[in-house]
Length: 479
Image 1 (tube, rainbow, N blue to C red):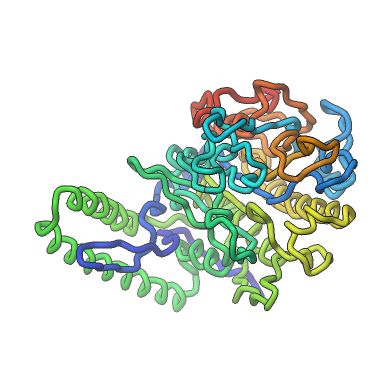
Image 2 (image 1 turned 180 degrees about the vertical axis):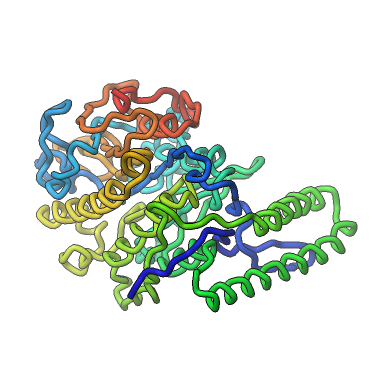
């Protein structure tokens, strides 16, 4: 089967709901991701891209005396990989390991430090606010809501205006598996709009992402091109209908609703404009992947061949970045409180979360190694994609966040997984002068995970000295 040949054109991301008066709800492609602009190849310059990956595990297991997993041996350029990261041996010079990161912990409900987490250990899995937005946890510590924009969305605000998709957010773990899990455990991106901060849902279907991305490419096959042109015409007809319906509603609304509707109307005008953008021929490494077909089925235990899903997402991320369809990507391999079945790495049919807590430790090691194998596959995909005089990876600032670190119980010399001390982040890419190939043991005052993310934002051109309540960055990423 040969890859389908395409030429670039308008992209419709995913479907959202445009609401009007009286419960009117019309399904439309999500407006805020309809972004256009000339292809970077045509402009003669190579853009910078931001990529944030995430794994929902910690660097230890409960009640063990084992040292932290994954942290390299030695410091600087002469470091040695930990046994759980040996699959990354060929990438050692492409990675920077930032260890010793920490999210500070409060001492009471009223004493949560800036960019810090709740003191209660049981609130561990809800620390997305400090970890992603640099803001202190809210509520009783078990509320996973994020109250400010995440770094990927801050990048999208700057770089997304000249790309077809404002951002691309995907997740390999399809289901929550646990019914009592936080509703935001599968969300890595939060966007600020006015005085609102909303979650940006992640795609879990590679088939839907494939259709989304390739809708913006016109096949050389005339019959297929005609089919897509007809589909575009239907979408325009829907827009015309919404336009007329909104016009009829406007005069019957109050001031607040008129303001809200006006914002939707402005986005509608922008969407219509984007649909008229010219196409750009496929060139260089901008190649559409093969059609993957239907997604793997979801089995009775919730497993859905995540290994295959991850491989498909890696190729789709490469496609989106190489074709400059987006410059901001997030990818959750597993979510906060990773309850994915361990069968994905040949382990027992038990949730990862249970194994991380209760062992056996050998399975925890295999779980961590599996995450690193997948991360390595993505980095290789970017490294092996030519761009300019180098590779796609040369123009990417990528980070791999890990949910938990390595710590001890308050009254026992035993490890605990619910720790945000001695955390680790892995960095890849050379965008903006990044210098990979080191193990950096971060020091107090420059060791918050958001400071690492701020460094990546700087690498892609965001003028940032901090994010949220967390000031500072980690200069070793660039030296």
